[in-house]
Image (cartoon, one colour):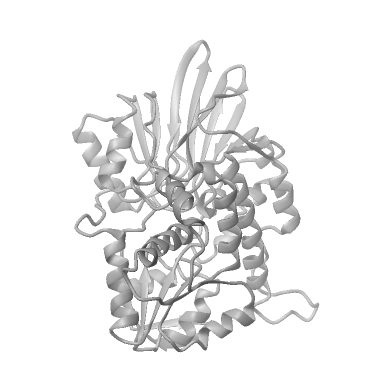
Length: 460
């Protein structure tokens, strides 16, 4: 049995691991690596023949885990993609949105004299997404699924996102049973809407994310307290606006539920809230469809108060005209818009009109990869480029980790300790500092830890 690390190796994005059991090849995740400016070109250069892959296991829908699946299909992959039902639904939304982003980038530059777009060529088109969706086979949580006579897959809930799972593979390798866990992205306990991560079984090998290695989440304040504080400062003490960049899938639903609880309890006077993301509307419908998989708090709220994602003074913005009307709304308000790292999406319009507004606060609630506009703002850049224009930053920039969907250092260590005494722990999906911090902590606890480079191969 052989394991090769082709993505998220000593970096965060582009999760992709190749497990070979004899001649049978399984790809665990196939995400977009967008840490380079030329990511569209880089992502179509697979280090293996896509047609040689027998099966893909998808841990969850986020684009850094799912976003390159249509490229794999376009280049010859003909197998199935195994995932949970919510992951299939959410991934479909994200992949179609990726096509729109590619097409916008392709048309950004003037056409050539032959009438072709001169921007970067799309990685894939709608047809390739539809071909990919046709390959989805959904599996319920905690129901062992026999891939073939030698391999069984079990999905274990890990929070992080609706449908997110750790993939546990039980393998008969020439008469010897071996177990390997791919954690995907590990969530955190008591997160709005999502279930707590379930304990992982004892295994022989672990491939774990390390996003928050060496870092601890804020403990001295609750999410409710922090949101009340930020809204008070931005919208009540001064007649301003609070802009919250949030991923349409996952983060937005948790944030809306948290705001619903705050205003239901009357902790603040009514304030208009706009959710400006058509994709968030689609994703929220998926959350409603799979309501049996949300946490008990959300189920109880639904039973006593009604829909967690609908309340007075909350408006979902669909059309571009409605979005422009939000820009012209001059009373205090909260604007939730995507994308979370500010790379594309309607959030750029809101930034364009508000980045130089002294009465605007921009509150980041998630991770921003290096090189993104969000990262630059969080790094204190006094001037940023938005829509091909250099703009001074006068808005207040704030950040909280209380809505981070990733478990922190202690959560990661706890998850890995649940797996017993594995022969080796591989750490991926993290910046160098996080990887090294988590590696050192695990080694002090007696674990055999490896931080693989891209392309590193291990015999298991």
